[in-house]
Image (tube, rainbow, N blue to C red; front, side):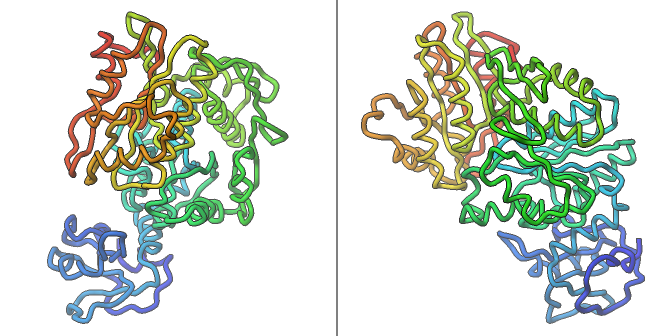
Length: 489
């Protein structure tokens, strides 16, 4: 495609050189530059792409999109100057790949918790209803049933559009996508055309990046501000920030609720380890998922399906057959009837939701033992809060490593212990080695007790000092219990 076509939808401040040159691809990383590509200089959080323009040209870039023209311009190279390279990249990627999001019903899901479950259930639902559809999630990306590794909750614009173009080629009609606050802030969704947006909730997370809760909220809200006229905006009315998302959107507004009046309503009739009995818009249905948080997820999926023109009975019948998402409230039982639950809960709100769910289901005689940590090089302020929540809702607590990354695991655990009140100190243990922590929890458990291993969920690695080694909470529990399969996979 010619450069002139690629830059057709962006606002150009200055242009020097021939725009009729052929461009074979786009790149914002000089290390992956291929001769014939257009290089886009992005100002990132860790480095500035403008510092690598010369390296990109050395590797064969035929043109450069930047915010500031380099002092030493290279002869014969076209330089396109824009106000924001990140925004321009999204629009150019969409153009280069033939605007694939405009050929799909693209539904974005944002919020602190529930994004992965919601998009995964939507993808499974619409596949079961007979549609071709794609999935972009924290766990995995999919084109129909074919899986591709996921490295970010929301990929970069080039990868996003390339993936969606392949979805279109494969006959997909829908794409369900997690939209992270980082992706909105970094303009990774620039140039995409959404048919709808779903808001789950907003709680304490990612303040290492956004610095303040207000900035975090604004990033989520901006996604709805960008939704076009003709799309829908579906929000959780029970979250106090939900209505804020709708303030400036041009999309048609809808709400869902478990507590009050809304466009889509749900009541919990039964909540057990085996599943949920819900009344959704007047119809009672049994689902395999567990907990109030999953009642919200199921309701939002149902609502989105109805807004996308699906028939109520078919949606509810199909949803009732779907299994829980990998790493979200999966459980296994030992021969001694100890129930161990693995969940991705890694924020204060998510951890409290899971613990409250367990406490609402269990009897009065079982003890609840929680194994929990906190990620390194992430929001430090949530560590003592998560520790306090674990102690409040558990009988015994073991603090352990999550993904320490480049931090000292002992220092992370010290941050967590600051949240423990004096009268609760006796109920905690600190074991840095996560495998040993899980084994200790199993050893402490009596028949009928419940273990929660929180924080990593679906992850099959542990990251220490930049090295990812294989580690899977479920596999360790299965080995200890002598089980090969989870009851609730």
